[in-house]
Image 1 (cartoon, helix red, strand yellow):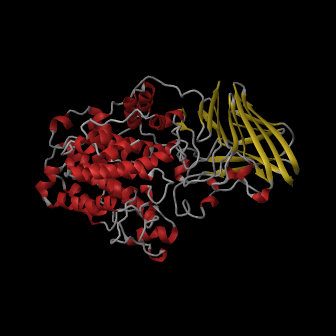
Image 2 (image 1 turned 45 degrees about the vertical axis):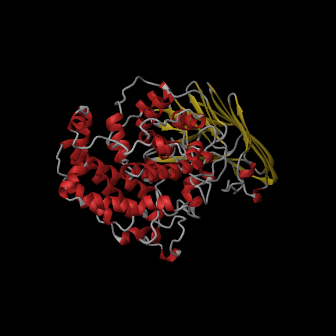
Image 3 (image 1 turned 120 degrees about the horizontal axis):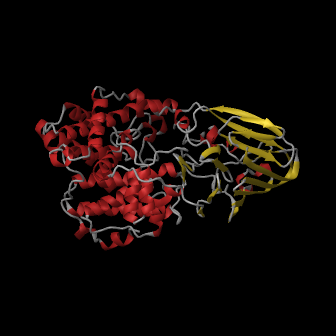
Length: 603
């Protein structure tokens, strides 16, 4: 997508030097005082909420907690709290019009500049060339700076803070802005332009994910704020665009994200950020919105919407993810897509939400100055969806919605879920995917598939005797076909060789009267088969059927039925599924040739 720009060096003449500030500075009182009253109130609430909170300390022992016990939260909680408080203090100063930067702002900037590293503990030594031996990675190496997601994001926050409050900071001391520039140069800009061996750059590895656009977009924003040399800024943009091209090369033509729609915000959404910055840096002279794959990528969350706050979730995606409405509305405007504009307005959210997770000051300011407040007429989820590259099918028939997934049991955020399905009735989940849990040291380690939510036995797929699906690039669905009323596939390759699965074909279909799951399983030796259904509501056995919520699951023959309650104790998962989930198992007798049919209807 960007290759022609890079090779022709057309940016050299297109860059509008110096690049204009992205947002009005605090000294522009007409811009800040002219904001809508609800946004002014939101800014005051943010500032007041954090005003009485001290900046928390960041201790070596907190950083070491990840290497010692896999505990991410001990360091990340105070780390992100520092950045939220700084963002709130900066926004409060802008809203109040106090031309002298308050001590809360200067304290925050200075503290963050004093941090040994801006990399979070879980990313320390994350495939970083030249890192210390594993036994010495408990602490960051100040002589070998790495650029991870949050080092880049920290540079973005400090750069915007100094742009917004430049004169006020200088009134305290010109050293504040000089210090910020020195730190972003040393920690982010210089490594970005001189290193080729960070994995997310796509030079040493090609299996890229959201890290690439997330980091690149924040680096380009930082460059726009500080770099006043045309040739250097051109080189930084060209490096970033080459990385984004490598990222786009792994995105399928259907625009799907194998990390799930919850990751779109910092995948496709971050690519959108980079395109907006490119357009801004060239004074609008370079605008790239006609690429078909880009259009599919930007529309992806809308295609995964199931109604209400529910989205199709697979892999490490929450069933109720945070969706950046302002970004989607902006994408819709650029693509000339009224449906996407309306969808973005539906998920407009609040200014405070931009700081709730990993603080997105850039997104908050875009919302503040370019958002339109939402409030559009009701919209309905899109019709049937087929994503051939992801191998995902969504069907809506009457009150029933069926989601079927093929794909491969591989990737950084993958679960062992080939052939799994989910079902909604009347816009509410009945058969579900549990989704994500709070990240720990096990999440991206060799122990990942010991976590219950990633294992196949907790997805709605068959177990062959005691064997469940396993992870690996060779463990993928085959013979996948889109059907007018559903999807068909063979799950046999997803099982280990010892299971002796010659064939494991599933046909999942949906009609206005319900859904049907048909499995044909051929084994090399006789084994029992256990069909698993993960349910949102408490089940009860009625005869040989299982009833839960609004559905009845009826097998075509008598089988042993087991029910397991899974209390949802993880705080992240509980945002989507408070209380418990329920695992229901139908087990057959031993056989080499098993044909099963389940009718799922409304009670």
